[in-house]
Image (tube, rainbow, N blue to C red):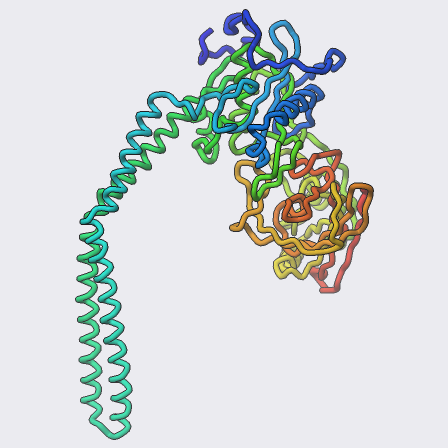
Length: 559
């Protein structure tokens, strides 16, 4: 059956579309360690939140050994690279694995050990070369026009007109100030007032005429310059249009398969997303490469994992050897299509029923709860129960907004909820004024040497890896004070005092090399993951929204 045709009933190993292999598949690697006793996964990995299967871990270890032995990549890989593995079965049911890297490696997209790209951006089709040559000609023409003698003369004339206008107008204004001082002195000596007024009016009229004359000269010079720039701007617009069209034609070359043999290109897959067009680098991550190769060669996907090698990228938090989920921005629309036809694990973030929160304080105006880890603060699309839902179920007569502030789903601890509009407004105003004091307790995976300090790392959303945050100079200010509480083996117990309230602030400030360089235990976004995130909002101090008395609440952490 030709690719591009679809049949929802077609199994992955149907002889109608698989070409039987008469020789070993080149990129399929066998496990070095015996895997006969390891049960094969019943469901394929949900790639956006997962615990790696044993086969994935064994494959990753084998890839790490291979990569570590390649001296020619050492410098490049030390700066950081994402790798991926896909455990598969061949047509005879024998397990093996495929390996891939994201982007390119050593300046090329193809290496014998790793699966090839879906479409090789570094060895493009003839259409790309032709269009790239046309765009290069436009670039050269733009440069030539910008350097031409006529254009330079027009620019000089415009600059001189502006400079002359500024100089003459400034000189006249200085002269007018002196005249004004002189008139004031003559007025004090009894000079004729009508004559003084007439003199002032003449000077103002002269100034307006000078302004009009220079405005005309500047506009004339600007128009002559614009004549030269008109062609340049038209060429730039043509360049923008052709570059965008070329990019979309390239994206159309990424024709992604799924387990049913159905094929869709990146333009189609991203058309329904908020950005509508694929982001740069879409289709070049490890996971899509692995699945594409498996489908093309009749290999049944069993489990996958992606891991980071090398230093963390600037602004991000990646730790050498840690496993990471597939990105949402570049990969989610692609992988949701490519997984169709496979039996996939359910999203582990959905369908979780968190335990009931514990009430710490309650009166007619507000309730303070100890939110359990796993409960959302506000209602979301995931279907996981939220503290807001809990409050409205318990108090159906609540009018207006309930949630005053938020805690991450994985963070436990004290959360304030309002029972009426007035209480909500009064409590939120305290957060805006920073008069509410909060502290968090956290267990960090690493040794923090300094007993106390302050972390200031501005944060902004990493759009391709939502909800991850990244450190960036143009991010929003984020400041945290901390003090070491004690050491527990290789771990450090720390108390955090956030002075700002940014998303994932404490998690990034703990994990980032510019912060404490020790991720919170159980952090599945910036650390190695685990049973739960060991971050707990242990205390909060605020003014009661009705009577103004100072309230201080505490809740001990369970870890």
